[in-house]
Image (tube, rainbow, N blue to C red; front, side):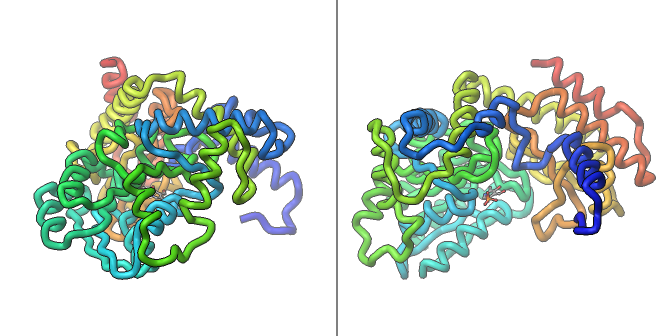
Length: 403
Ligand SMILES: Cc1ncc(COP(=O)(O)O)c(C=O)c1O
């Protein structure tokens, strides 16, 4: 942390050092120069025809990204947590039952939001690194009869990816609404919102979409809209109310500006370019690219003798959570950063101080994977760990060459 006494030169030196560091955390992620430059323009009125075009095109592209042609996307200023709150709070009234499928700490956010809205909560979870069993969920749905089931597609604290489709099917067999947190999956993992039966999907701008942080994104299907319209009790929220956002978004898509809260016009310009870049890469190809990159990174980690937290069959393509060697703590994250790559500490209570997290989504490619593995090798070496230099790079190169 800089203090007031430090000189401008110190600040510039620190900024220059930060600029050269490769950002490999699981969000916010590195973005392209074009996405960054899209925001470097005079501030536009939210009713300016150019802004109207940005928003309308972005909404259409989000429908494609979520593969949710019959859903209405909402974009508003905020982070992923706001998206979780918008998604769940509209559907839940005091006494309603919410079943949370928890595969890491982010399921806990749904639990807290549900509790704040007076819901009766049941949590189904699995041991760290494992997916939740579909039969376990079916039994919970049968006995608890929830109004809403929440699913965290990829939990960023464990690297576990849940298979959303069968979970939606089980929930819908008993007419439950399904809310899916795609903050760490949308744009990097396969997702078919409408076909899978997702009633509300959500994400944020700063991960696999490749835009700066600051925008919450929610898609609202017909059943979710009806649940909000037919509430028994008045909705206690205001900024988060579907009814305030849906008409504004529909208005933009109809070619007219809408206003509820001043839109984050600069971020909307960044997002517009990020979604334009995304649209240029067909989704199946983008998902395959993420799998290829993830495979190379995970192969490098395995070659170093390090273990993934997530079991192989449920290991996400957007990030990897890695167990540290015995006796090594968070100093590894600091050592890797000193080698020029920013990775993240663990946030799951069972993994804190014992593992690290690397994001490989959005624009991440072979260069970033190889640089990161190299920095991890040197970080381990600086901490006195035995390292056979190049071993992780060789394994990653082999995997990359198999495309
Ligand atoms: C899966 C998941 N859900 C929700 C969130 C919360 O998003 P935000 O930090 O943008 O509020 C995160 C953040 O990393 C996340 O990874």
